[in-house]
Amino acid sequence: MDYAASTPVDKKVLKAMMPYIKEQYGNPSSIHSFGQSARAAIEKSREQMARFLHCEADEIIFTSGATEANNLAIQGVLQEARNKRQDIKPHIVTTAIEHESVLDPCRALEKQGLAEVTYVKPQRDGIVTVQDIQEAIRPNTVLVSVMYANSQIGTIQPVEGIGGVIAQRKSNNNGVYPVFHIDAVQAANFLDCTVDFLHGDLITLSGHKIYGPKGVGVLYVRHNTPISSINRGGGQEMGMRSGTENVAAIVGMGQAVEELSSTRRKNQNKNMKELQNIFIEQVTRQISEAELTGSMEKRLPNNIHLRFARVNAYDLVVLLDQRGVASSVGSACSEKTQEPSYVLRAMGLNDTEAGSAVRFTLGKDTTAKELRKAVTILVESVAQLQKVTIQ
Image (cartoon, rainbow, N blue to C red; front, side, top):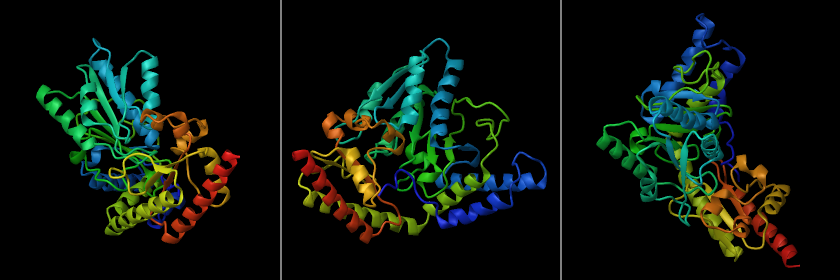
């Protein structure tokens, strides 16, 4: 029940990867046949990614994961802006509920005095408004970065509306700023990620969230987007990301997006939505003080984020794990802090409310039988913890 943290590698993905783990080990920068075989595999994956996003293949940059892609997007745009517009301090607009790999680079740039940053807060339902983003944009805004779907509570942000506003602004000014970056890591399994629909200039994806391998990600970079490389070296990935490419992982990610486009996957997502509804209905019916966090309508079909009165979320996650149910307090990257979620606090929840929230996320292989078992264990575990609290 924690597929948002990571997904298992799909069988077809693993099969596509194996030749590049065992036999085809050439360096894709080498000019001999071993190297060129690896190069051809990378370019095939680039084409697969381009078909998924409906873009050109040379707009796809492979990275080591979403964190690197997000850092490249933020720091690369800022660096290029500082090179071209030295008379002003660049300004960034983002939200208070972004992943740490967006928030931390923004805070670092602020601390270094290299940029001004506005962190737009969501409404109580966990969704930012187009109007609030629009009002935050200034004449010196060079980047707007908004996640497509929140990694903790699964709420879907109006990125296509935000992108449309930004595109119109650039058209009116005949300019390239602000650049629009979308972290689509959690959304790729479920939502339309085509670049023209989103009006995105930069889009981040991750392999291990879509039944591909860990250690690979993508940054889509629209042609003519002002961005600099932040990783110097051999000039791989069109000069945007130096370093020998992880061929097997890149092949796996290409195959993973091929599977995303299948009718089978769409049916699986429909099944997940049905299971999500069942889980929420049964838990809220059997636990009177259970409450769903964030919008029910504008939510990923696999995300269930619940708060339980008089329950410490970390205690519940540990108890559930002891009984065979994997869940989480927030995103996997933020769990080590054991502090109330910054996402929930940004939504207006107090520390007690935020400290009682647990995330459950479904996968394409989740069954109704597993779901019923998880509900039973959850109901019993919450009752056990609430009894201790009362005593």
